[in-house]
Amino acid sequence: MRAVLISEFGVEPTVVEVPDPSPRPDGVVVRVEATGVCASDRHAWLGHDDGVALPHVPGHELVGTVVATGRLVTRAAVGDRVTTPFVCGCGVCDECRSGQAQVCPDQEQPGFTHRGSFAEYVEVRHADANLVAVAPDADAGGAALLGCRFATAFRALADRGGVRSGDRVLVLGAGGVGLSAVLVAGALGAEVVVADPSPEARDLAMSLGAVAAVDPSGVDGLDRVRDALGGGARIALEAAGRAESLALGVRALRRQGVLVQVGLLAAEPVVPVPDVIARELTVTGSHGMAAADYPRLMRLVEVGRLDPSRLVTSRITLDEAPSALTRPTGPGVTVVEP
Image 1 (cartoon, one colour):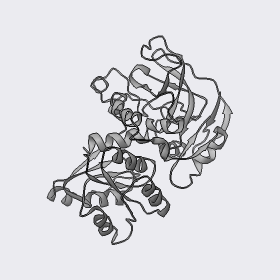
Image 2 (image 1 turned 90 degrees about the vertical axis):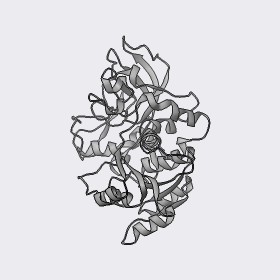
Image 3 (image 1 turned 90 degrees about the horizontal axis):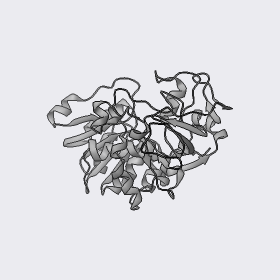
């Protein structure tokens, strides 16, 4: 098969012929229809993830059709159209058995712990625990984003943040997860204020349904955010992965508000603990979503309340993927369609 291969960290990968994957006894092989280009893939290319071994095929956010199954697989068959969470649980530990595969201690991730979906085919391990059915008529580009960005935003808002209809939510960072959160929050009946320094990102957030988009930079950035929120947010989602963004999010919460952290930070941040104590705030993490939790998300898509394809701003071929991986462009999401 053809695949994007990273031979050296930080050096642009190449599209080459590599052996087709074979399913493990409990795994499947999926023919890739589409795969998203995510900031996490760039971290893998740069060598920021300890589990990535070279040579390596990146890509973790995918949709496709099952073309081969291992002998132990019982819940998937050749011809099934599927996606998978970027966190694939082992399926047998206490966490997985209780439906919390996103924190499985033995988790595996296509594109990180083994070769990923910037390819014509990809292996998905522990398939019975990790495959999610996708409707035959769903747009491939949008469906691919359900594997990472939309699932991450949905669980962070619905489960970790407890968003309710009528809430005004603060989303910090209008990248892939942040923009997904704009659409997810809207589908759940909430209003969204976005904070991002990029005018282009703010404009895109507004076009997707944000009620306000604010530049949080400068000494009066917090005041602008609070004004847009009407005083404060009950829920904030930090999706920028910046220490100053986390601190601003905490300070922009109303009393007993919740900040959900999903952005990956390069270094440990300083959290404004006096604010956390005095106003009884909660700072919590969220790490993707288990396959067991997907039915609620998929229902929003099926009834037309959520359209992930709205986030796709560019569709490219596999030959164009190395450039997209190493030289990201403006806001929105690029999808590779091999």
